[in-house]
Length: 627
Image (cartoon, rainbow, N blue to C red):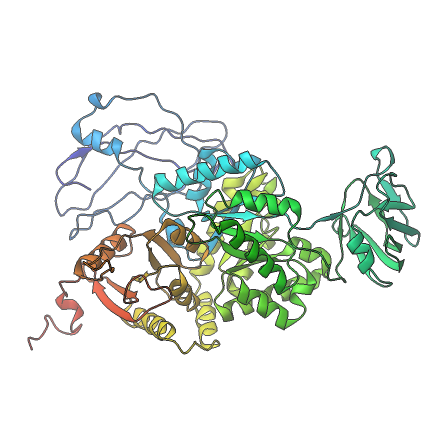
């Protein structure tokens, strides 16, 4: 907001694309708006909506200037983002100086709700969301992390997607994390005669063997995995095609397994096979996974997800491979490791689950295959057990699969799907994920927006805050200065009603400890590198940015009033501090740059570290008393 100037507003219109087609062009407003000093701005915009069907737009609010700060204190707000249209070029010579300034400035940021939420959103990228425009729209709708599914697509396609994501990141000035999801050891049967499906009857015998040279029929098919056949024993269960066909092993040898059909159904070429009753003696990394991972490590990936984790040793093998690949590179901070828990072996023993969580930087509750290999009624219980363990250890946890499945083909979800998202949040999940909804669905933007709307509604519920706070007191802090300072900072935030908790962090360790406590105010993570800032996009309540800290003559980073003022300015730019008396709580570890250290707390008003407004001294008096 600039006093006594005339400006032309630029508008990005966000509309409900599920009920009608609507696009809005950026135009010079039909009216010029005069902004006066110390007056609230009254703005009128001309919206050009066109297309078929009913034309209705969601309510929106334009920026208003605070009389004290002269700064915009509210964000442009609409509901569903749509792609911007290409506009005829306008030369800068045709514009007034004020109009030229506005043309060069970024677009008014969309809905404030998108930036206030604490729970993070993962969106899988696929054919429906692979363009720059769609990636940007998904980001503005709520996506904090983009998932690249290495089960599909070519390497060059993945590189192009990462490049587009980084362009979106650069355009909007906010870190975006990229998750590389490895396919893992997926077991599949061979092919059938004439490529036709075979119908299996209940009670009939059926054999699995190693002879891939012969096409399958109604009596047998190849299962080209000798290590699996050697492991099977009588009584073990095999699930084919996501459990549509169920087999019970009656006899087995080194090169075969005989089974009885318990659940009848059809089997066709290369259908998947699950072994819920067996811990597979195989590496979690197939040759394809190793090739995909080696390539992903060249793409500036922030997170790596390992599928079908069964044992802690699977995570250790992945870390060993990553360390070896990065040994002779300039990479200082390797990608974070996430385990996808979708095998019963990983969750049945509490000790195994605890160790897996200890070894990982994040956990995903992958309910797809987990729902195949366990009973449907067990999945909600397992989900709660995994989330509870992650909350105890302060490890980010993502709930995934079929959260808004109906929105693949429909513009609105079922009420049960909304309840599913809400349940994950009340349980304490850091993030929720969309798969086919955003990758191949007809309504990817609507799906991300709907998920965000459920998040915002749940997080506004006092019961949600109570549940998150109660969890804090059920966990015992570590006997370290970092935990002591972090807990104290949280208490200060609650006591003085600080608007944000600002944390200097080298690798994100201190921020994770703070996020575990679920403070009521947003966490602003101040990271020295983009890698650290991006990785924290997965963490509940964290909004990160890169900040360079000056060094002294000996090259050590310093925490002086100038740096503190930069922090308050950053908090203002993010909309956390809007009034002179708004407070920020700042924590750091001295000397700065020490990973995992936190030993300083400072409370600073929005006006900066060199002032302390009278109203903050004694709330019941007009002014501070002189000493």
